[in-house]
Image (cartoon, rainbow, N blue to C red; front, side):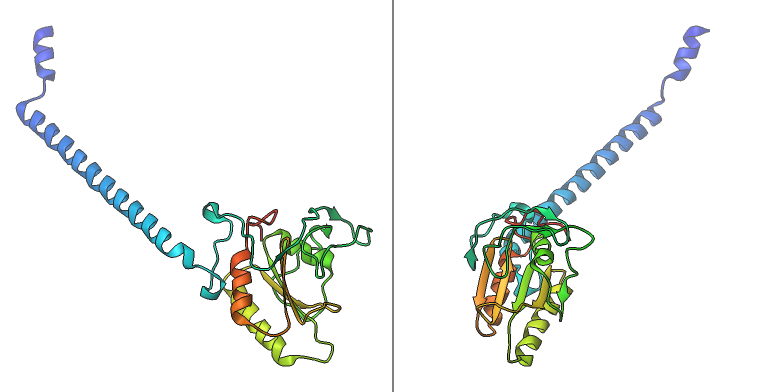
Length: 218
């Protein structure tokens, strides 16, 4: 009886052939899906390698600190890093080493950073520096006699950048020694007239740069 039970459990030739077909189909599906995945990964890598260098502010985007990008040395003038110490409102601190400031003592949340985009009111360095700490770009102007056309040109450029998810903030800044100042963490560039290409180059190079302490923060 035991021998007969064992024989009854043995698969039939039809079952063996069906099992073989199932295994072959599984292997074919695995190979097909694996090949498709590998081809897709290679294509994606090729596309990134081909187009990544061209992404900039002028093109509506910047990858900043992603993909292991190296910290830029320019454009603009490099300013010594004064740290990223948080202070309370009204707390005294040493003088900044540039106007506008590009690093140093600043307010923490919720007082800073300020919202990205165009501001018509003057913002304190202690607020703006927190924006730079997050890899943002400052665009500032000083027109004692008025400069409506310049403000409009800058605002259009900044709004386009913000709509493209770039971290850029614009505000008036009295007392500068130039009409326009562009700031990033430890970098500044000064202009006396509107230069779209130069401004775009600065923003595209420094926005979300690894130079900033928190380049991927918003």
